[in-house]
Length: 376
Ligand SMILES: Cc1cc2nc3c(=O)[nH]c(=O)nc-3n(C[C@H](O)[C@H](O)[C@H](O)COP(=O)(O)OP(=O)(O)OC[C@H]3O[C@@H](n4cnc5c(N)ncnc54)[C@H](O)[C@@H]3O)c2cc1C
Image (cartoon, rainbow, N blue to C red; front, side):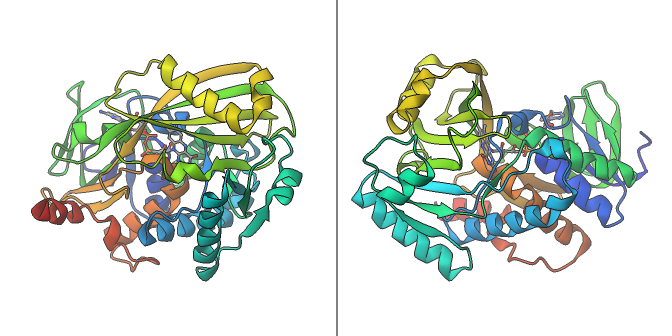
């Protein structure tokens, strides 16, 4: 790669780097991407691929909903191997307290134009007969979808390549900044703008970034077509999996097009090794079996782990890094980066090209971190 040929160099070829390459090349910029392994590796290879609207905060809702609509627009162009299925989510309520949360969520989503349906115990049992009897009900969100993330990343990257983007894989970046990307093999690329899209590894390249690794486990079963029909998530997820510090597990299962069932999920800080943690795995599977006892009879095919890139306020970092005017961030997507990759790419490209974003970009600006620390 010649060092003067690019407007933007993106470090990272996960779904966020791929979406940024796609969007920036669509806007006519000359793009290079560098990454240390294959396209769609990192958390993208490990993620569940649930395209989900979430409401932890207004900013999280805005980005997830915006991104979900972008996925819906892209859907006719997605190749078959992306396995996009609009199966919908059911948030499962185990008791009456969680039914209160169902009604709150129904109201919140409804006021913001997202259709949902409150399910009583019988309706839930009809839609998902393999859930344990005695659940209180749930909330169906029909527009939520699932896809296969590595193939989605590859599709986005190939579109960028068709527009002239250059991809350099199997190269480890040692340092970025001041318009330069320096590799560990001592080669370098220069560009006006560098984008750090290195996910959970982004702080290694941008010291001072408040992004921590948050480990997750997933299990995939053999083929059991029809056993699970929607992405099923326990509403207790909001109490447990989203707790900011403690290790946690939650019932979260996904039907794949193959008939396989993807079983999650766990969250751990301070566990930086890739190996499967058996105690976490047992906790996660026990939780899944509490909700769907039939899972205990199933054969599993593979278990793996991945690292989410977590920020203190659970929102991604999208925009210029205050300490270096050539550097932009597109990282910190925690458990929502498959969903929010498309919205992230739009917002980042708007910032770089001076266009007006379609949703307010302020909540995602890295500069908020400086403000937060100043008030901490
Ligand atoms: C168990 C689990 C389940 C999840 N489920 C969902 C879900 O259902 N829905 C959802 O929306 N999100 C989900 N996520 C989150 C989602 O997977 C991530 O947010 C998303 O994949 C992040 O993409 P990324 O491109 O930012 O990072 P990554 O996919 O991690 O990519 C990082 C890239 O940076 C490159 N890189 C890093 N360091 C260097 C270096 N020094 N030199 C060169 N290249 C480098 C890597 O090679 C890689 O290409 C889940 C995550 C996990 C772990």
